[in-house]
Figure: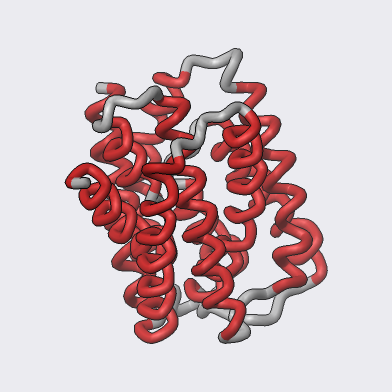
Length: 248
């Protein structure tokens, strides 16, 4: 019971972080691994809780009319294809090398995210080139990273959409939920079919993750871009420290 309570606390915190800036899996996965189950089972539990939590956050954004559905429809196929391609490439490359590259890139990403965009303010209207060209490329690129390595993919979606499309952080966060949900469902089906989801952990964690995502998405909508930036930096910092410990 104490183990489940601990996992629920972690899942709630991860849900808050995930709904705002992505990267909640960086908290959940290590916590689940501490129970002694196999890595495959831990990933199955994490993906089950994360999928339901992301669904709650997406619905919360959707109810407020913040999800750009046209962009989501165009972005989801690119994310799925990119993830599949990334998964194939990881078989040929050393993951440790990718981890070291990310350690170098993450502080740059965090710095760029904090740069004020006074000369290029965020906007809600996009050109056809951006809608049909840039969005699919972003989703394919980050999707490739998601399949190749994974941690922090949600954060990178938000950063890429904000910097490349000059999309508001709130809209970028809402769009990311739809894209991440699609890739999460695909992975979850695989774990379920292979019996890698331990429901004694997955179900209570899913409830906690949903509650965390609801709280986090409400915070994002209430506080706006400021809270998204704060949680982006927190999420990237957690990923940075994790990668340094693992690969250096």
